[in-house]
Image (tube, rainbow, N blue to C red):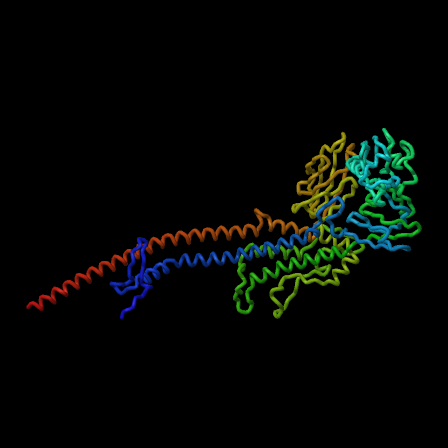
Length: 589
């Protein structure tokens, strides 16, 4: 019994079934497949390039994320300006509180912003601010019962710290109704009401100022009728019943370093720049000591985060570009080997990490920190047997960093941040960008006539002075050609001068380099990813064109083989007929 090989059955586009090699004994389907496969080798090579590009793009995007994290770690280490130093991590403050009586934290709370100066303060809380509060007489009715039989009807005026409003009591009103009417106008008056259920048949109205202090004390008047007098709130049309006053609504009073200060609230936000003080309780005679010091732990944490983020970038680059020094062979993970953008990024970051802070202030009594190595951040030095993935990373000497922060925090700050110092208290640096120089600027400000008419300046960079440059002026804002931004707070009635000296720390150099690398349009990583994606799209289009061409070629080849099979089949039929005729002739002879 013969068997049928289903693999040799071919169904054409026209739906006809053809046995491959039925007449020629040639499996033309397999033959055509191999011919097409051979012709598709260029497309196969392109697909390998596409796969390689996809791996490169994935690696570059991962690197982009790591570089973004590194930039984020510099957010508090490059010197961003703010009016209250809130963005300067080196100005962070911590508070130490002590008391010779009740625990300090039970009497007051203190929050220090970066604007607070270091120092020590002694407090005594004489009195805390309170809200004015009083009650009516207890009424011999339930809170929900008609009270006008006791109070009568009429209109009264209620006045608080925010204003006045009138309230009308009508026949049938309950104590709860009077409460609700007072509360309906509390946004206008600053007074709120509540009802206390004394018993099932007794209730009391409570009136309270919403805000603390003497300025928010309440006053009342019976305008028509005697509702408030009958309630016991007033003793006459305008006099509060002292017997029902629960709290007088006093101001807060404290003694600070021997100076008595009062406020209408328990929140003292304007007493000392950068300090927010909350009073909880008064204890006359108890001395509370508040000490404000630099919080160097925040600066250290920021530096540690920078080192971690930098090393994450470098180890990733090491992994994706690794070549075995012994064999000279690249690793399977080295998909970014030879990528010029990655080489450029690595080179730029190493150069900054090993470079000098530009323009740091020289002091005669001590050396300034100018490189990261001086505070314990140095490149790893490896021998042949060390982990190659850690090559070129930063090695942290935590003890050296602690010593630098403890002994010279100002110098560590200058090592990292962009700094601007002015000899004129009316001229303040408000901003800068990646093009701003480490320089000395000599400004001449023409402020005659009540406005800033013009600002010219000389700039000295690396010992070279350029004179007579014009700054851009907008109101009180001044901007130099290299991006330094200043605010002039003088009286603008005469000419003025100012000398501003700037320095560019390592953190500022890093921040703007990283910002350039990550630029969404022109950044080197953005361009590298875009170039590969464009190349991949081109490859994919070429593969599609090849496949379209080969599909047509395959059909042509198949048609040719089918035609050959048909011709062979006809020839075999003719040969069979001739064989039969010849056989018949022999038989007849």
